[in-house]
Length: 386
Image (cartoon, rainbow, N blue to C red; front, side, top):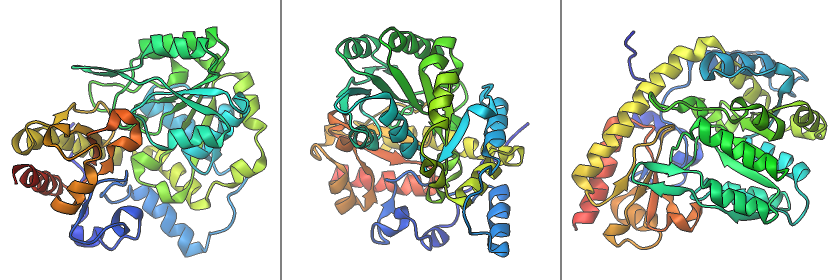
């Protein structure tokens, strides 16, 4: 059955929003830096939140907001992942979940493997948990990026106690292969290390590049692994504060169940309501329409770059709405985004924040109207030609 792509909201409405994307720069700047989307909310979410406002339902999050069952149903229906609701816990956001788990699987001063270029808060989260980020960069080939399993093994042999996995990977959009994830689990288990998998971009995998939940790949992965995710990226709910933590087996479930009650209390009521609505079957049609729009834009971006920035290097992402683009050929410095923002009036994310592998790179958010994407790349192309 044909699916009509989701349409972005008009720019005049978007500029009335009060979120980071629309309040960080002047109105003549096209904001494409932070991971917020320009689409309307899924109707089920709008109805749930509107009803809560109508009722004045703005109190504390209840002991059982329905997240366990809603997420387990979503995982089975959309991800092909059989999740025991008893293994599901919740907190304010994904990075909160990661840091609370890390605090309990490492000791102060322990090394934690991170795989740059990677989401900048990964480095901060490891530090907040008392660990030291140990960089094992992704391997890059003409076909894409992959986990450096040899490098991870060397890091664990050298004493690293945990692996912080980004699956799918931000910023490259890599959907890691099931075989690679199973091998990662085997390596980690050999050294008694935990794997914490940030899977917030998982529901946004594009056709031909299936997302594989880490805890689904093997008994070994379940024995040493945790998953942390949320509806917030897929359904544009970052400001509502709710994330899901999943334990792979009995010891992990026990650890999550033993976290301080405050970890759960950090969950916002509106976040819980919105996540339950997002994970419901009612929101599936909206997600299909979103994926159709993002698939169009990820390919359109490749065409626009070829036309306006032919020396840029861009691999179409497997998942998500974030593009990792090497513009170092244009001589805009180690961190091109300030120059692009100043002279082309397009705000992109700073490549070097993702690690030294991001020198000369920018990250572009293409979850917007096609005409917005076209205007942004045209502006940057004019800068390159000047």
